[in-house]
Length: 113
Image (cartoon, rainbow, N blue to C red; front, side, top):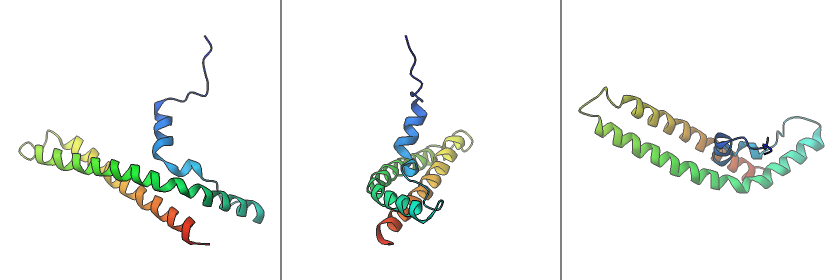
């Protein structure tokens, strides 16, 4: 049986599903024509950003809800669930920062000419 080297696993697929930055090209390098071509390509790819923003909105809502649930559950026992609470809170903060980046990139590619 032959193995497929293109199969990179579940974490790679999760990265492709959640992080939109692999869709874009670097428009800051090269000569003027290459930069312009990459910028046009990036403007065409902006149509996928609202979908990624929706994914992260749902994920951040779940993380914030889980944070609030674990915080309320562990109120009587402060040292029991602190790791889960901390993971949910930090993950929510990272997700909110990523959502701000996605929204800013979409706005730039949509409204700045």
